[in-house]
Image 1 (tube, rainbow over the protein chains, first blue to last red):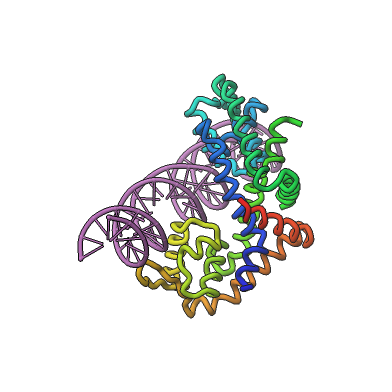
Image 2: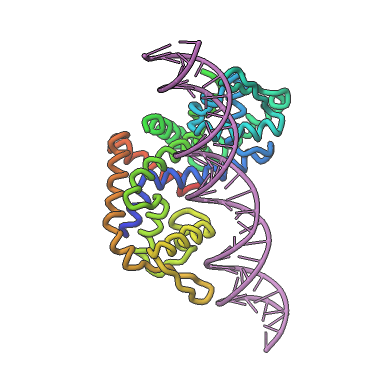
Length: 140
Length: 140
DNA sequence: ATTATATGCTTGTACATGCAAGTATTAATG
DNA sequence: CATTAATACTTGCATGTACAAGCATATAAT
């Protein structure tokens, strides 16, 4: 076994990025029916469940830079799935009717995604992995 | 607990992407001493240990698209850390003297990175996580 | 041997993302 | 009250990455 194999297969940075890329591909497939990539789906779900949520609020929950939220949200506004309202220095996002109508389809995509990787990894393994990954992510 | 929390914290796509982003940031810090981001470090290590390796070979080992390898490698050529040679339709990458000289520093960055996340997560937890992540990634 | 197909790499383009800097609003301090 | 500092968001720019299409070479089929 070469040194490089050890570096790769034993490096959390590398393995987690590789896994993330593959899951992203899987997720993108799962979400094609609604024509949105998965990041947007999360964003939309959060806005739907937390109307008036701010960019910084979304930033914290999604672990994304505020500027990234702005860009993602702008595209969703163009698609009339959300709106935004400025109150002082705060910006609030609001779901539209279109989003409400889309929601069931959106949730279906999620189930499909979960089904996909559960099938590949086994439900128990997937559950363990997601739990550990979540905990690790919180710590870093 | 809102539905969205479940969707986020229990979604492997989301958690693994969040973790990967955070580890990438950590890794970028660890590799600043040599002025390279971590993807390049992996690439260089593989080329150093497998002289004459091809883009497709690197693509498989790094789980990156061949076109991505081309771009990464091009930048390393500009920095005189590798060279490339065409033989038929195959392209071969070769380490330069500069790379050989850089290698010890490069490996040091790795150890620092591992130390960093081992400290945060605990060595055992990190080991378990990397193993599970690696296995999952192989399956998908 | 010529044409067709497959393989390997590179280039054009697009995208999610982060950081640094800018703008606008609120809070704090003198 | 005026000035300074802090907060919230957005914009400019850079980067790693993938996909699709293109080009070059090798292999297969007729």
